Length: 270
Image (tube, rainbow, N blue to C red; front, top):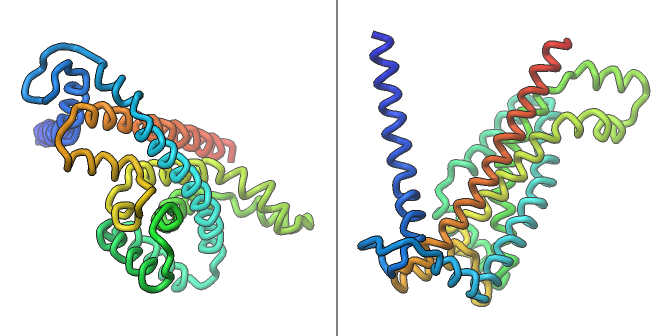
């Protein structure tokens, strides 16, 4: 019976993976089509990739997207790490749970609702002109909860006896933070950074609400081009975006595996 259940679960998992990845494979396959549509495959060609690399306006948008992603992820990582430390050192358990619940609400809030909220905030309350700054602030805001969730488990895995021993030896708070805490949570901080970067590069809904004239990101640009008509250049561009995202996920995986091995090694040593 368990063997049958195991086979059914594998079949279900395979179905889910096919459902998720088949459209992506279809998109990548036709990005190498020598034709101009996805109605038929006329032959192998990289002409659509050449067109993407020749498009100077598109490369300006790519640079804007990378600057936005790196800057928002860096700021969000700093703020999120400080926030995780503050939550970790909260002595009131009830307050800690409430803060974590608020953090989780931001994670599960629909992107459309979040984008509309930021639109109201920047337009009517803060009266900030729509553009790079509003997109940057929005990306920082939705990236902070991600970093907090990545860093907190590393903090809870800390050996508190090391911190207590350092305090008994007269180490200052800065020394404890610099010599004990930060080296032990570096993996979580890096994971949070790369996850925030992935979310920032892929985000469309929030960015669409808060972007303005003169500034655009890749996701918004792809949406605009699709509305104008399906072009295989969009397939090529989407393929490149998928490869970048996949590369970032691989980095996250290797960092997580490295942290897991280090944790297991410490557990054995103890």
